[in-house]
Length: 101
Image 1: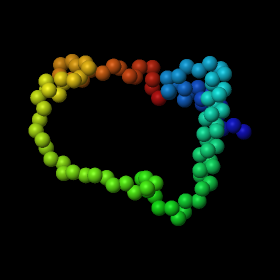
Image 2: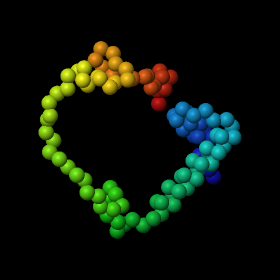
Image 3: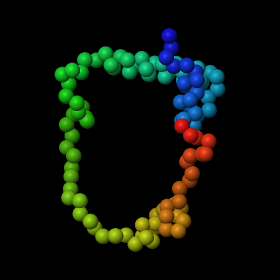
Image 4: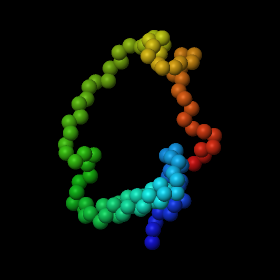
């Protein structure tokens, strides 16, 4: 039995702001089902003796002292901003009122 139904795929598409026709929705449903299959496959791997790590190989993380270096004048901070309003960065609206979760 499929764990993913077209309504699930439609919801994911809406969250990703994708418009899918019926054929694409069917393909998306199948892709999501295969992804869950891969997750199931990974959950079968025995990791009991594997130490948790952030990376597969050790990586050196360079660090430096955090020292203050002075302040920017507001005009200097805004000099390369593509758009500004009253000394604040102006950005396009990314969420509509209709998106509620």
